[in-house]
Length: 204
Image 1: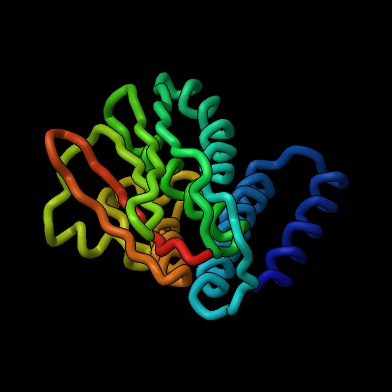
Image 2: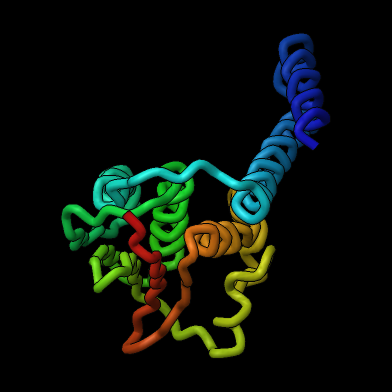
């Protein structure tokens, strides 16, 4: 699927240079970019589920801190503040790229869906488990929908299903990454807050 997307992109770019601005051509380019984003997410999901990735000792605290810094400006642009509580020195055996993607997905999800002004991020070592939590203010999610949140292409708000480059695959990828690291992930709703918690065994 990557090849035809790349071919369409190249041809559209050449046409744009020849004929200049054109409403129909702009629409082709926009939809092709969206298709490219979808293909990338499908590949990410396939890799997370089916590919054996190299594992190494990882400072998970540094990964989470790095992603927190990256998302602080995004939250600020949307009138929100990211509050972090990250325990130092949480080490585990994992894949740095996938763990970075996990944190990124959860933070992006929280910022996009928060109805309040604060996003909470925490990382703690609890016994032999690294516990990552991301919290945002939001409407309670019914129990039957909580079970479907990690399904492919599932979106609670179908009216916004075509928003940006989001296709209901992010949480599926997050779940696949956590399970690849022998962990678990779940969502809970209480007192107007939605919390996603990923628990990953610490294997040194």
